[in-house]
Image 1 (cartoon, rainbow, N blue to C red):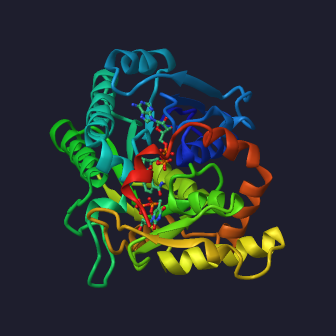
Image 2 (image 1 turned 45 degrees about the vertical axis):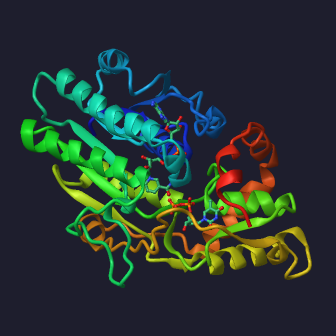
Image 3 (image 1 turned 180 degrees about the horizontal axis):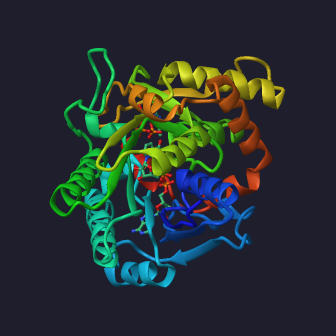
Length: 351
Ligand code: NAD
Ligand code: TYD
């Protein structure tokens, strides 16, 4: 097997940490380099179990620093990139779209330039894999599923920045034959998820008996996938995907937000030994998110047909594992929530 030298950006974040863990454990002969700026969302605690492995390396730095990227490519003789570093939260993008354009668009462009400039001996055996989101397709309001040929129609500053980065990746493939691939995944959940996103925020608030803010009427629909299933899909696409292609990844698991929150409340009541219905009393309807996409729904059949990947964890199992993890790691939750990380939203969303 080729001994690959892979650069994973954003490896200290939620999904990135699961991808780093999978690659470090599954491929002991690979060199795995995690490059991360450690923003509020990046946390080396997420990687404690693998940080001492000889095939793991950490480089703290910013994808906006192109000289630094050149140095890292050279230092490790990088031949594969899995690019996850990004600003990832829609609500934050409404508050500070410029930061999203900088990190997500310019940062991706820098990484493309670093790969292009570093791979001077040809692209044989090289892979530049960009992790994108189903949100670039817009909102599937009228039924049906997003396929890889659904037109791009981003509607939030976050998804606009991700769509733009996707276009740059495609442009580098088209213009310079850079061996790119892109995947677009639905909503992930699982351990190490920063508690500003729906599921971990609700878990944290239930634990602290705080209101559970449901935006609008709670009728928006998301397709949820356990994060380890996403990491396995990334492994499949990195090794077996085709150059220049786009792959959708999804859980075939659509939930209305209010139904999901109720199910989570029920699960938490059981786990905490509370009377059924206790947590659900905390549900509070608040002002809707601006431009709130109604529905995301992914058709991942291309990926399944080409690589055999399919989700392995049911939502019931995955949610139970997730709740168990947060209950066993309340210290982690306390650490990451110790700053004023919710300062943006308290004003935006009020009951
Ligand atoms: P996250 O916010 O948890 O982690 C992002 C990571 O990127 C953090 O470790 C952060 O420190 C790092 N980072 C941010 N700016 C950086 C910079 N300028 N330089 C270097 N590192 C930087 O995000 P996540 O939820 O793990 O998402 C990872 C990727 O997957 C993103 O590209 C996101 O768009 C995509 N995605 C996420 C989901 C989801 O449900 N969370 C679904 C589909 C796709
Ligand atoms: P989120 O986890 O932010 O993911 P995304 O917006 O990228 O899909 O939100 C998931 C859904 O939950 C979305 O429809 C917005 C809604 N939501 C709430 O109702 N309350 C909340 O406190 C949060 C964070 C999200």
